[in-house]
Amino acid sequence: MTNSSQLTPGAELNSAFQPILSLSHQRHVGYEALLRTAPADRSNAQSPGEVFAQATSEAELHALEQLTQRMHAQAFSALPSPDGNPAWLFLNLNQRLIASGGYKETLPKALEAAGVPPHQVVVEMLETPGDNKRLAEAVHWFREVGCLVALDDFGTGYSNFERLLELTPDLVKLDRSLIQRAVEEHAEGRRRILNNLVALIQEAGSLVVLEGVETERQALTALDADVDFVQGFFFAHPTQVGPDSNPDPGLAPMRRVTEKFTEHALEELTRERSLLRPYAQAFLRAAARLEAGSGLRDSCTDLLKMPYVQRCYVLNGRGEQIDEHVLPQQREATGEPTAMGGAPVAAPPDRRYSPLIDTRGGNWLRRHYYRDACMERRRLKISRPYRSSTGSHVCVTLSIAETPTGEASPYVFCCDLLWRPANG
Image (cartoon, rainbow, N blue to C red; front, side, top):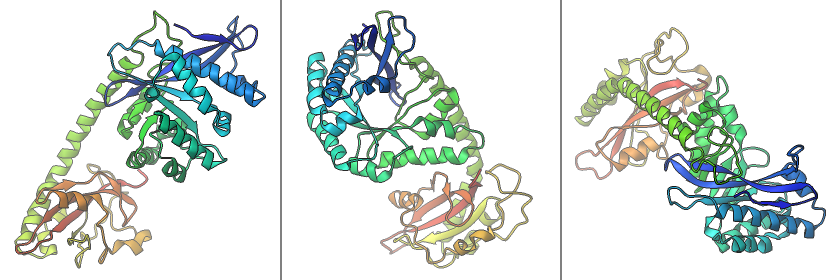
C-alpha cells in the first residue's frame, strides 16, 4: 500500500503515517502524513525541506505540492480502520504555498482524486512572521471548504497568544520542546506551566495535541497535563503502511501507560483525601459555628491550630472579603515549608511578600473556589492547587457557601492550606 512518486531520476517520494491518539477515547483519531524520500539504494535520504527547496519557481512548487498532497491522500484512503471509526488526515502545507494562495488549487484536486472528504482533513500551519492577513484568509478558506485547521509547533519560535486568539485554530500542536523540558530534573514548575498552558488553550476553544512524546515519563506527564491527543515515537514511529503492517500502531503502549497513570493517580487521590480529611472535618465544624453566629476567629480556633492552615476569611455575595481575616499564631518552622504530610509545619508569612499578606478589602469573585461554592451551596469545595497571591507557596482552598436566614445572597467561608512551596 506504499504510495511513491518519482521526483528526480533514482529518487522516490513516499508517504509515511504517524498515528495521533486520543487519551480519552483510547484509540486513533488521526494520522499525520509525512514525506519520506530515498534514492534506489535507500541511502542519503532527503529531508522534506530539501525536497521542496528544489522547487525554484511558483509553478514548480505548486506541481510538487499537488503531487505530494495527492500521494498522501491516496495512501490515507487505503489505510485500514479496524474499529470502523473515521480518522483525520493531518496534512502539512508548505508555507510558500500558503503565502501564494496556491492551496486553493492544489488541495481540492488532491482530495477529490483520492476520494477523501474535506471534513476528514486537518491542515497544519506553522506560525511564521509575515502577512497575518494572508494567514487569516487561509484559515477562513480551509474552514469554508470543510477542513479543520491546526496551529503547529506552538510554544516556540514565533508563537504567541495573540495569534492564537486571532486564528482560533481547531487544534493546537505543542512543540516537542515543552514536554522535553517538563520532564527534566527539578522541573515541577515547568510541568505546572505545561498543565496551565494546556488548560488555557482548551479554554480558548482549541483541542491540544502534544507531539514528540518519546518516553514513558513524557507520556505520563502528557496524561497529567490533560492533553487531548498525543503523538510520538513512544507510541509509534512513522511507517509506510502495507498489507503486513500493524493495524493498531500505538494502542498497546498507550493502554499500558494509561493503566500505569490510572493506578498512580488513584493512589495519589487516596493519599490526598487522607491528608485533607481532618482539615475538611475541622473546616465544616468551623463553618457550623460561624453559621450559628460565632465570630470568625472564635469559629476557627481549632482549625487555626492545624499545621498547614494559612488563613481563614469570609467573602460576601460579590466576592468581597468581609472585614478581618484570621491567621494562625506564628510558629517557629523547623525548615522550609513542604507539601502536606512533610515534616515542617506551615511557615510564618514570607516577609518578602509583606505588601500582599493583608487581604482585607480584597475581591476574590474571579477565583474558582468562590464560584464553585456559590454554584452548589452548603457543599464543601476543595480547589485545585494554585499559586497563592499572598506569598511564595502553592495552596488549596476549602470553601463553602451559606445563606444567612432572611438574606438573598450567600457568604462564602474559605480556608487556605499550604500545599507546597511555589518553586517545589
